[in-house]
Length: 159
Ligand code: HEC
Image 1 (cartoon, rainbow, N blue to C red):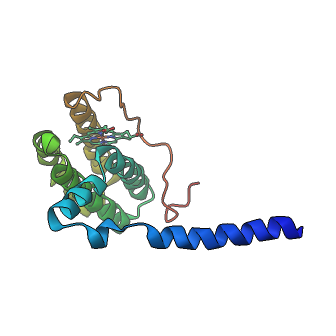
Image 2: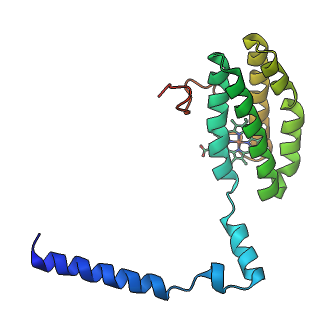
């Protein structure tokens, strides 16, 4: 590396530190209402939550198919909590989310407790249908969900 580039890099480093120090940090300087407003803006939105729901959906299915029932139960619980979180961050979707929760729970966890793939598969199919019903009610009917062909969790080792 030439001396010229090196000194430019050093200067950038120094000015970077100065800039960072001079930035006002709302987490410290803002008053409480402003902080609350910022925190609300920083909450995950429906699109963020749905990416995670999609992953749980895949992992739920394959955990059961691999007979990993405790892991399946864990995926179902996390999925339920994500939908409950959606109700908090998106009040306009709370009612349709309630419809989903009522139709899917507790039936899905019950089939998991039975450790019966055939019963689980039926409950999963019903859930898949309910996911899409909610999409339809929220102007997202084009989000159609196929039965998962793979999972994302390293626990299921399918990548
Ligand atoms: C309360 C209604 C509701 C329920 C229940 C629901 N979704 Fe969604 N879903 C949405 C909404 C709204 C969006 C669009 C989010 C946005 O962009 O604002 C969405 C988007 C998605 C997406 C697209 C994400 C992307 O960008 O790739 C996937 C995948 C998804 N949902 C999966 C599921 C699965 C799987 C279930 C069932 C286990 C489910 N959803 C249940 C409302 C719901």
